[in-house]
Length: 489
Image (cartoon, rainbow, N blue to C red; front, side, top):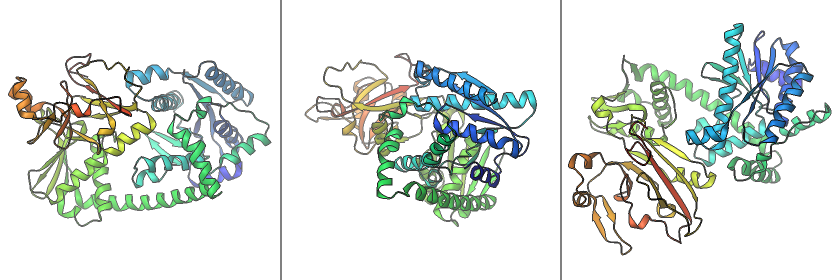
């Protein structure tokens, strides 16, 4: 198995001679195998090796045991080990993240911190090695498929990935879990077991413990076949990226403060190339991909058949405007930037929240305004729904096709009472003596023309939680001026 992994690393140029590999070691079977294999290969392949262990502060004594086990193993084989201690629960609460996402971010931050320390103190290139294996890759693709991923997501975990200024490698990616356990058994090595991997409250654990085993009962080679499909998707995506780069040469022009996309040139290409090209340019302009969704891409492509003057407002303060056969992507002017774009929360995203119980957030404007939301089961009529101006609880099951955060439109209305009486939003605002200037900027959660919530004000009667409510959607707006939410939030 060591030679198989060596050939895989050589084929993908994972470890040039003289590089220092920083292996992420949790103490579990996969990372222990990674550490031992890299230790055996380090001399013949000419790279240095050290380990990093991140103690997450989640599992109490069990977590400390894992850290001590990892340090002892590294000392046994004379591999330097750096231990970082982080507080995932505190960080998750502060950043409004789920535990899994918070732990992953802090873990990667530790790896990058050590890689930077190596570069600063020795001048050597540090490559980060992680222990993802074949089953992890299959699980990731299934998870992304369930969440509605595009082709990029179906390419699975990349064996070599440049992230920020660092290179991340996965030497075990074509190695199966059974091979890993057999290798450790033959070498007489023990490893730690993470009790959270047994908790099926996490979607990934349900995939790992229920779905993948069932697939393997249907076909014992299911994971292998998924791996083969991943390689094919990867090849197709590589080809698509090459074609996108060719298209960019004729379809995209970069100015000092803007990107110009030729409508005529874009229309020459297949829709798949159009979508990927627009996505590519958006990521380059924004410098990040978070909060840029499939909906934004679709709205931009819809401009190809619209009249000049139409525009799409985007996260991070960017806007795309159609101007005489050109899509101009640039930062909004200050006055324009104060306006909030129409942001869609699709039904698929709400279903993901219901299934995994994780909080989501979307950026609404350029001043950091956000909407945070998650879905949970109704605990019963005794639940205490605090009357907060910027946090509301609505009946998830009443929202059939997602909702949109936007300002008012003609025809908007509220349902006032259990009898279904309506009131036009405009009339409601006048009756409530809301100033005309504020009416234009008032943010709304809307389901078509029906208003779910006038943010900072009332919710529609037919979306209120009742004893029949199965799931509750909790929505919190950040960016108001009360309820502990500052204007700068």
